[in-house]
Image (cartoon, rainbow, N blue to C red; front, top):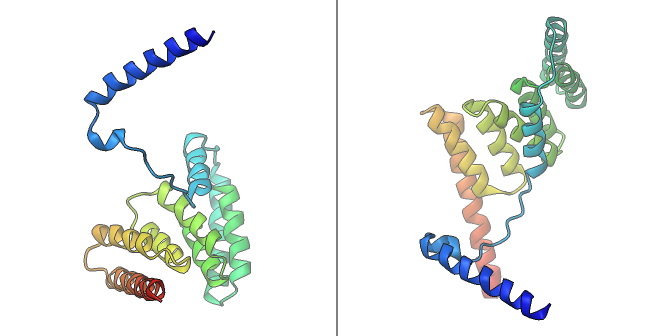
Length: 191
């Protein structure tokens, strides 16, 4: 058995070395493990897109009514009530990105930053070319102190809507906060 195992291992090693010759150099090096803090939301979005539920016209009408209620609560600063209304809208029409976008904004107001990020990720997956999804993703990442990721999201939105002053300001804010954090870490490391 030891001889068979050794022989199998040598064969696999030869096969790997042959494959390695044809690979670009960077693919043969070990890669760092990356923890994706957005993986659950990405999985949820993928499930929504691959297994869409059927939505009736009645569902769409009711969802729009809940959205209107959510918008009214949002306008009054009633964040929790707005979240509840948008959640109802999502339960009726789960593929409408605006419901996730609006609920994400409410979660930020409630300092529920991870929930805001989750909704922003789903929003972006549902409508990738929508500038507002980039904005929501950037603001949620910014609230979580993920400045570089926030700047990238804002920049992507700016590429969709050139000259958008809100996104320009957001990119600048993310970069400034990221620089400040970096300088503080560098300063602390020197102590």
